[in-house]
Length: 422
Ligand SMILES: Cc1ncc(COP(=O)(O)O)c(C=O)c1O
Image (cartoon, helix red, strand yellow):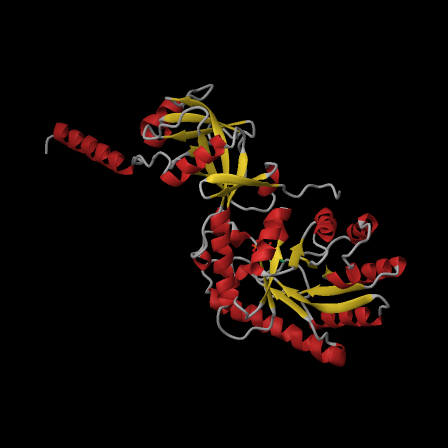
């Protein structure tokens, strides 16, 4: 072969390979769902970053949840994942559950005032001073902490601290013990530890043993692991600790013992079979942020979005300094256009229009965030971009009242929890 044709051949090969590797245009304008949602926000006079909950989808997710749990287990609502009083009210009403799991002291005070009928279980052990602050800030009322508030304790040291607090307050305190059933995020890891804690509680004048909590999200998250194998291992450990506690307590084993497990990622793994717990806690699956896009939640649907206005729409991509913007957009058609949004850098992923992405060369911003997209996206200033939160916990708290979307309209606004207890 002649040298010239060899060179031409290699160039053609390189170009062919380049064409193969070059990203294709994945941009697409809003689908009808997001066009209707945009119109609803416009009609409601919205023009700032807004957290939207789709009520119809929320209700459908609740039905899905209940169809799995049916009457096999009690249902406990994870408040950190649904941090709004009216949102909780909706879930409590539809599920008929008054069991709540809490993770933050000011929110415990709020819930105790707002839902005097609630049965509260802590989802993590709290510094004893946080518990003291709860009692300090609790003005009294129909909620009876000595009956309805179950503190979660993880070590003998913490049991001793809570015993001292209960003594000093002259308050009975229902106590649940945290188990390590494989997550390795603390909790009881040996029989001796469990027996020591039970013994301390039995000897205490004010602490009352009420049950156990074993959270096991690792069973669907360990790489290369078979969830059923990990589930069975976790449940064998759970059963073991139940047996140890039962043996130790004998007649003092509570009649209405509380044995909590589960979370959104795992709850559907208990649809069939016998398991040692009697209640499942979930929250996130009802609004389904992106972290919960997983096979075990395939029948749940996204029900929450961040909507934010586009401030600026440009037909180029330019980056200050050595401008690699032109190079980026020449290579990738999905970087042909630039949009700056009102706010940004949330724990969230762009959802609609399709094919928007952040630009790591330009960087992130909580003030005006750059998103790039292809020329197939015709988005203009003042139109809406939608993102899906990666998690609802904390993210839901960043936008003020939740805009409730129902039947093509914004029908309500739901205040979210705040740090103040009043
Ligand atoms: C103790 C405990 N239980 C249950 C859950 C499940 O919550 P979700 O269903 O929102 O994932 C969590 C989440 O962190 C947790 O920490």
